[in-house]
Image (cartoon, rainbow over all chains, first blue to last red; front, side):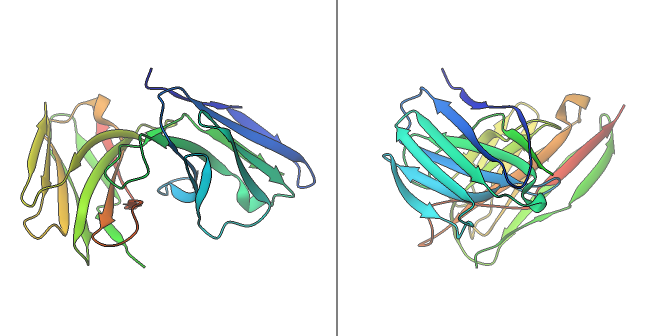
Length: 114
Length: 112
């Protein structure tokens, strides 16, 4: 199984809503990532978890709150988002955290903030 | 900060023509990875290059890593409509962050 799954596929939320994005992998990978991708742009790294601990936070606003409940799951909690936060949110995983690792991306959640 | 420049941003070709995208870094890279993202899809890993001057082939795709490990290219021979998508390089600077930096991508449009 080389699949990373993400739910929901699409999400529309208002600026006062609280929602969560979910990501799951069963490849035994110990590193998981959240990326944000705007149209016609490359993925932009947000967070990295290694062995269930947050190892990188790329100065992401606190309205995005990541959580790694176990080695297979990664959540991204959203609160008080802005319209400019509308984007494709990609989860990825890799065997380890090293730069030699292949990242496996999920299909993403397309988020629209109204 | 570390940047990986990728050109061109867009490339239109007729089916059967060749295509090349280039990535350049101002600093030496430990390795470089290439990903393909189909329209409406997500990035999918294609290959990783590690050694200076390395060349790898996957069917019609040829990947090269420069001798100085500062540049890389992806060449597609005789493009097909299935090659449509955006190709990203992701380079990891030597002695820098262990997380690769993505280039801006090259969008390939193939006209039948």
